[in-house]
Image 1 (cartoon, helix red, strand yellow):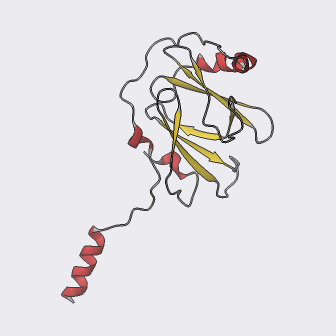
Image 2: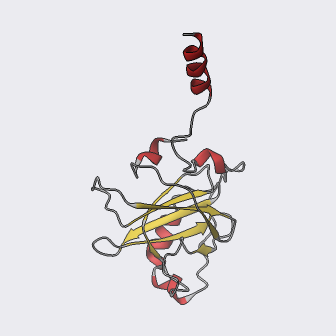
Image 3: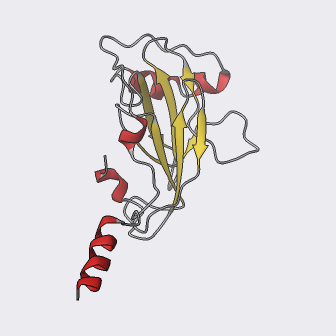
Length: 164
């Protein structure tokens, strides 16, 4: 009996993590921008093409990685586009890209992000209203580009919204 109790104690102390999925607090930022966002700087023709959407979205202020604003807009059924605007400088950056042939594109997917984190989660091949699994890709913002990190996705693709 004591052997069985010892095994149970050992098993309770050693738990396999439910998932290796990154969480937002793992990539927290220290500095939060306060104040009026800088005017948007349109440096590329593709940026100017979406100037109204980008400018109006950037006015709301930072919602990602301390001082960046993720601006999202629709472009048809199951079509998302996004831009990332630095509230300090007004510079525009592209969202994580999935098409290796597209060097400069605002094409996007369903993005999850927080103001206090450098982590961005892109849900690919899924619908916001569907309950089916989708592929999750994880990106860390490095100040001027994204670096994709590889982790094991969890079973329910949309539970990460409630995680810290």
